Length: 419
Image (cartoon, rainbow, N blue to C red):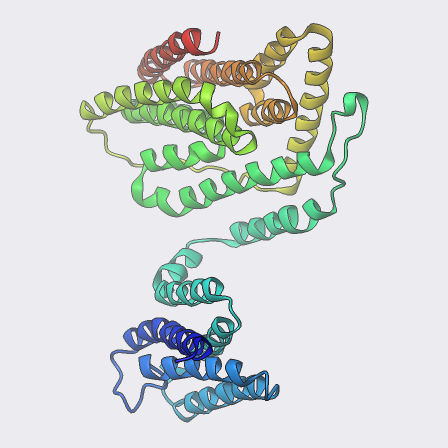
């Protein structure tokens, strides 16, 4: 058999298989309906995708065939649903669009985009199969979350491409594209954590809020928990655990951000951060075994994704970059460490992004790593201060003890690996 024939058989078989992937989900979804009532199942979708493949094979000789086949597919599926429109379960158009995509997957496979066609078919099947979960997720959001998602699309999809990708200002320290890219990175991580906390916190309680809220702002979580501890003293132990957990998430977040911007930073940072995370986690596990508090209130985490905070963060990042360049030029590494300690109180993410960019641009990796570590330590000490001034005595004792031991473990490893 000629190689050309074998290749055609292969791509047509792939086309059929991709349709069957989508068809299996549609058949399962409508399994409660009789075969004569179900508009489309596994066989129909397999044939739709195969017809797209056949049309793609013959499209070189008959260019009108692929669009004609697609139009016929849509018309036939629409008619099938219209005939059963008396049953309200068949009033949706999801399956019609799924048929449209199945036909396209067959054509994509024939055109040589095998991986893309497979990815599309699998993604469509996953989206179709996640109907209840997606609907439940959306139903638990409110208008603020939806508007915030649109704001993120504005931040990432409109403003970022328009930002100039060149350096300006003293020391060539300011690159608008790089600064806004950092805003997109932090906003994305924060918004993901916020949405997760928003959906899960009511069900999983304080500890899930601490874990997910730590991705948004561990300082905000600390302040929120400390205030709740003042109002509900019987929850102080579990709230103290939550503060330590949020601080642990902050440490992991710092390492992830630094690794994304400049992967060589992970080598000096990873041992220190890992030891601190393990220490804090063990202390929290020991504390959790001793407590049996009942949760009567779940703290909320404010939406981190607004245009004004994004602009303020971009301004803060620009100032830190400019001042850091000036301090490095004037005082060398000591200047970097000074700005890291001061910045760590307000926002550990901004200084982490700045120093990671400096390392990428030529700053010694060990200097950048020490600066990031110093900012994380400063931010952790600030959490102890917040807890002591806002929260109760019980939670202050545990937070002070747990975070002090965590800081000590990190310093011990840092003196071996960083200094």
